[in-house]
Image (tube, rainbow over all chains, first blue to last red):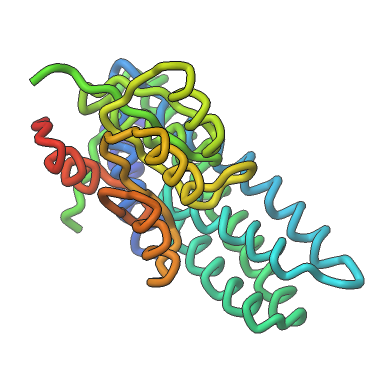
Length: 154
Length: 123
């Protein structure tokens, strides 16, 4: 595939992530912080997000598996996940965290279990899509092209 | 205007990295610590900052307690609370601890610039 076509695919793919609500404007903020002095900034932050989220999801699974669920601990973990997902612009993960905190506040175990599944699903969707996005970027760079800059105007 | 120095106080690595970079991109040197106690300790060791970006929920010492202690130590610099909490009562408690400003996460360049304007720092 020629570079121009790869760049167009990347732009289309990125747009689809915004249209599907996987990402929001905060992700563009991150992209704006990346420059030639710091070319891997977005990938680095996102990889920190993956590590952090995986740890929190494991902790949440363990906490909700206890015979007596400590909702304070559940809420603290969900709060963390909400914070980091909103910081990288993983909008659907963030939104599912908001629903999760409501179930937690109502001390609804079944609701919390459902929300945990939902958050996991959204997290793996975002992870998968972001990994594809970075792969497309790497292919463009490997072919000698530059990454097109995304604008908010779509 | 002279260069200013900032301190980022946040337990989350994702936020630490983003806040550090946001400041750096605006030409502001900054140090990162991971809880309120470290923020107090770094001041006790004699360091001075013009701006502190303070998270609220952190282990060991949260942002409210850290802000109170820093003010009690006579630290007069701009402390901006940066948090995802949005309940009025929590916000009020954080403000009363001695904040000069409060911004909801996620922090953006525009929010940071608005904080900097309050200390007359133009980017």
